[in-house]
Image (tube, rainbow, N blue to C red; front, top):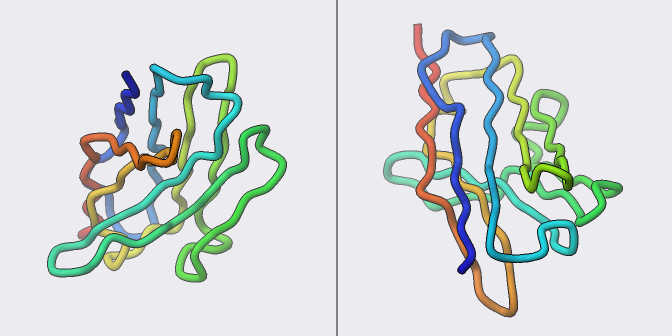
Length: 116
């Protein structure tokens, strides 16, 4: 079955950096686009970044452009989210997502808190 396991969250000061990882299994990872979403308390889940199956196409939410970078390693079945210049408004639970055979699959999420 499809499994997505996020890691790398934590508490960081404004202006700091974190790298999130999402280890995937149960499907042919190199054949599918991957996405990172986030959900802040009291807010809807929002798409943060998307990467195509081979990594040649990447898209970002306006709020993170120039600060976040999505990447993937198809040999390791892992997708990453490098987050730089973090702001308090980036505080959220971050989720990895894949749309596989017409269904959406999600990891358990990893908490990112940006605070001084």
